[in-house]
Length: 169
Image (cartoon, rainbow, N blue to C red; front, side):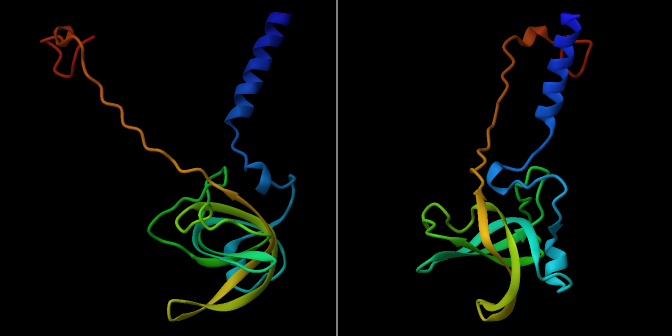
């Protein structure tokens, strides 16, 4: 019986490890209704909880809070933004306190959780823009992804069979 319970526990642990979850600072309880970015930009919803991901475009520290301008991107199942060539727009997040601009610099991926509030007008260069706004934000700054390259060198070319055109055993 212990032997079978060990297998069940091991399989359960592997299955749970495979489930993608959001990082702790931006996780919510099951059943929490989150406002989508599309619903907020269409003006159909102006309050509620929102969790959006993107890339930092600008950071501005104010006396009591920090304003982050973020380029929105859809997120993976774990919350990391899927950065690409197309975006649905931008949004603003206000975080209480000071965020260091060296750490939260432009180009870094971020996920934000907070309360949706009234949109605010602003500019992207000279273009007038209406930003959806998240107040009382909790943020998760995603670590940089390092690309790795592995080169394979075949140590024994004689292992290849002359009768098999794609390699040996």
